[in-house]
Picture 1 (cartoon, rainbow, N blue to C red):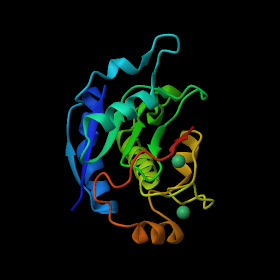
Picture 2: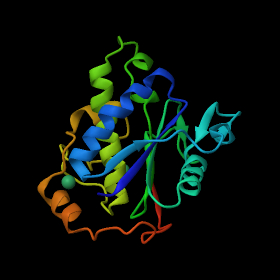
Picture 3: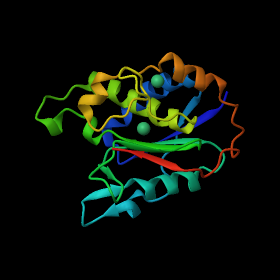
Picture 4: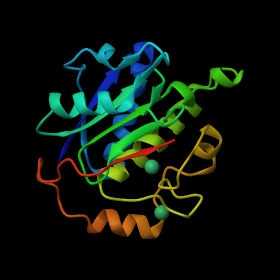
Length: 191
Ligand SMILES: [Zn+2]
Ligand SMILES: [Zn+2]
């Protein structure tokens, strides 16, 4: 079974989400998930002017620090790419690196009480979505499909954590990925 490194980035006590996330990703993709602390200082991605962390910089460091495996960064801080106000996550299309942020998946920024179960549900959806991009999937027009695009948390809640039949067929048809075979193709981002 292929391995996936889960890398907490300023995740604090929310690092407890990594274990159930890893189990969900194993069920979905058959990836063996291992937790690894970041092998770089994530502070390098901080943009003082915006008070956010540059998603693309983190993605590059994740790739560099784990050259022989798939890698998913799970951030507790807000992420951005220069042209957008924020991103919930970002992934290489047909690559092996992705990152998600729980920052805007929490209830608290919307003035609602903390809900750990809902947070995990949202995190699993966003992680499956980004890894779906790693497997070469584009955004899907089916609202319930996990590959439908989400501009915000409301849309995350509308979709399921599952692939529609068409996306699932595409995942299953994807060639087995000897690590390093898929390289730095286009990086896809999503708001
Ligand atoms: Zn789909
Ligand atoms: Zn996407």
